[in-house]
Length: 344
Ligand SMILES: Nc1ncnc2c1ncn2[C@@H]1O[C@H](COP(=O)(O)OP(=O)(O)O)[C@@H](O)[C@H]1O
Ligand SMILES: [Mg+2]
Image: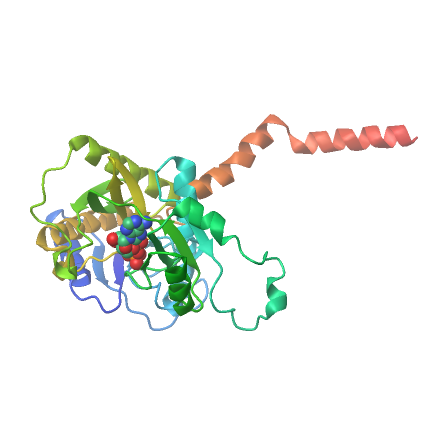
C-alpha cells in the first residue's frame, strides 16, 4: 500500500480537503493500493519509518520533534514535501543571495547582528566584529523608509517599517535574539503572491498587503499585463528550481514593471480557505492532490525520494565532471614514481 500522509498543526481546512480530494481521485482514476490519511505517529525508531510513500509537511517549522521524524522518514524513502534537510539549512537572507546569483531581482538587503547577545556569550565572543558597525554604509545603500524583518521567519511576525536611523535602533532593540534583515522598501504598483507546486506549477494571485487580513487576496483586481504575469511565472520557476521546494509561495512587489521577489521561503504557506478564498483554495487542494499522487506513483521503495534544488545538485555534479577530465588516481601514481626516481 502506498500511503500519502499529511502532517499538520492548527490549520483545519486544507488538510482535510486535501485528504478527501486525494482519496476521491484515487477512486476516480481506479488507482490500486494507494490512500491518503492524516499522519499518525506512535513510535519513531531510527531508520525504521517507511510507512508513508509521501508526506506533506505543514508544521515541522514549529515542532522540532516532527522535523527529526521527517528526516528519519526521508532516509527510509518517504518523499517528504518539502525536503526537511534543505528546509533546515535555508533562510531568507541566503534565499536573497541565491536569487541575486540566478538573476531574479530582489531588494537590496543587509543582515544585522542581534540586539541581544546569544545565551552563553560575552563580549569576547564578538571580537571578529568591527565596532562601530558600519551603519552609514547600510543606510546609504538601503535608504529610508526601509523594512526590517527576521532573516528566518514568517506570518508577518516582527516585520517593521523603519523611517530613520533612530526609529531603526529603537525597533531593533525590541527584536532581542532575532537576526534581522535591513531591506530596501519596494514601493509597488502591483503585488502578487504565487503558489508554486512541484517547482514549476504556478498559480498567481493578486494580493494587496495594505488591506486588512481577510481582504488581501484581491478577487476583482484590475487586469494585469500578460507580459508581467509571464515574467512573474518565470521567476517563480527559476527560484523554486534552484531551491528545490515542491510546495511554496513566492511574493513579488512590482516597481516600474520589475517584479522584485520579497518573500519566497514559505515551505508551509497559508492555504486556509478563510484567508485565501474559495478559488485559490480549490486550486491548491486540486493541484497538491495531483502532485502527491504523482509522487506516490514515482515512489521507489528503498530509495531516497526527495527533491533537491539545483543549488545543491550543481555542487554535487561539478566535481564528477572535473574528475573525468583528469583521472586523479593515475596522476598520483605517476607523480609518486617520478618523485621517488628523482630521490634515487
Ligand atoms: N522590501 C519590502 N518592500 C515593500 N514591502 C515589503 C518589503 N518587505 C516586506 N514588505 C511588506 O511586509 C509584508 C511582510 O513581509 P514578508 O517579507 O512577506 O514577511 P513574512 O514572511 O512574515 O510574510 C509583505 O507582504 C509586504 O507587504
Ligand atoms: Mg510574506
